[in-house]
Length: 60
Image (tube, rainbow, N blue to C red; front, side, top):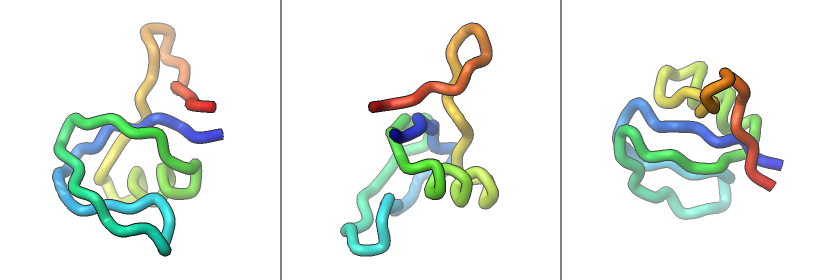
């Protein structure tokens, strides 16, 4: 299971240490692992994408 985040900063990102970094733009959304989402949120680089009810969006 992955969570959907929206980037707050443009830059190079990767979901796993062995993957090649890819360019992401501010406002772009992506499904990432919960651990990666936590790291990006902690670094103020992204936030969780929520629906109109305020619920976190998940990807299967």
